[in-house]
Length: 443
Image 1 (tube, one colour):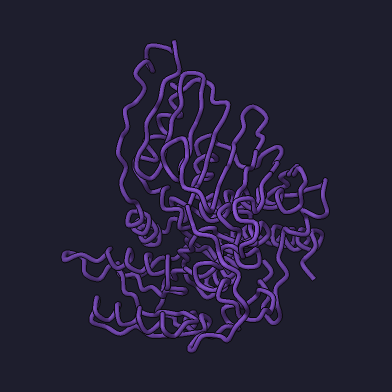
Image 2: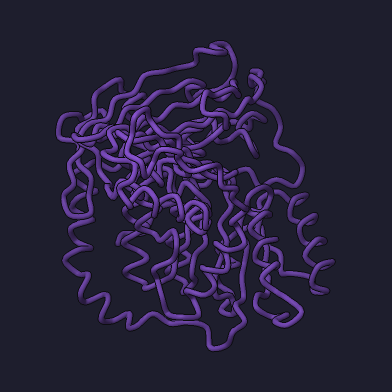
C-alpha cells in the first residue's frame, strides 16, 4: 500500500525533530582532498551520456585531471559496453562496470555520482548515494513524486552533500540576464506568466508485451516500480509517457520552464492548481499521460499558465519551449535560444523600443563546472540546489495530480511539507508504493 499522508508526515516530523542532532553528528560538509573529483555514472544511455561527456569536458590541457570517470552502471549490457568503449577511447582507461548501482556505491574512491536513470529511480539512488558519502548530480525532474522530492532534500541536509539537479538553464547567462531585467521593474506589474513545451513526437503505436532483450536486467530496471511484463513501449526513452516511471511532458520539460516562473516571480507554492487536457490528439495510441495539457497555477495576484502538446510543434511565441512574463508595459519572452522584450502600446519611454533579441548559448558545461566547484568549496548552494529542484518538481507534479484526479488542488505549506486538506485522492499520490524489497530510507 502506498504510504499514507499521515505516515509520511509522521516520518517527516521525526526527521525534523532530530535534524539538529543529525547535523551535529555529520559535521561540516567535506570536499575532496585534491582538485581531482572521481565520478561514477548510473544510467548512461541518454542524458546520462550527455552528462558524462560534459563532466569529461571539464578536463583541459592545463588541468587534465579535473574529473576521473571511474565507473559506469546500466541495466542494459549493450549500452554499458558501448559507453565503456567510449570512455576508454577518451581517457585511455577502462572504467569499472556494474549492472547493480549498489556495487558502484561501495567504491570509496568515488566522490560523486551522475544519475541519468528513468525518473522512478532518482530518489532511491540519490538517497542511497548520499548515505554512501557521495555528492549527487541528478537529472530532472529531481523526483517522481512530491514525497520523494521532500525526502531527497532531507537526505541532502542530513548527510551534508552537494546536490545539483540537471536543470542546466540555471547556469545560463542569458537566463540570468533576463531575470535581472524582470526584477528591474521595467515590465511593470506582471499579471501573467506563460510557459509551454511542444515536442512534435509521433503517436506511440500500441505494442504487445514481449521477451526481455538480451543483456537487460529488467527486474533491476523496474526496481521500486510495480512488477509488469516487459513492453518495448515502456523501455528506454518512452518510459516518460507512463505514470509508474515518470510524469510525461509536464515533468520532463515543465520543470525546465516552470523553474523560471518560480525564480522570476520569487514564489514556490501556489494558492490553487487547475488542469484540463487528455489524450486529445491521438486518443488511441499507447501514451498513458496526456498528449495535450493546460495547467493554471493561481498565485492570487498573478497566474502561471502551463501548456504542452506531445504531438504538435507550432506555438505562437515562435519556439517549441519557453516562458513569457506579461507585464503592463511589455512582455519578456525567453527560451534556450535567447530572450527579448516586446513593448505594449503607449508605454513609458524607457520601454518604448523593448529589448531586441539577445542570443543565448548552451549551458550544460557551466552547470557541471558549478557542481564540481561547489564540491571543492564546501558549498551546497549550487545553481540548481536540492531545494530548487524540489520546489519545481512539486509544482510539476501538482499539475499532473490536478489532471489525474480532476480536482482543484488547494495546497498549503507546513514547514517543508505540502498538504492537500481538500482531497484524499490527491494525497494518495504524494508518495508512490515501492515494490518489495525496495524501500526509500527513512529520514
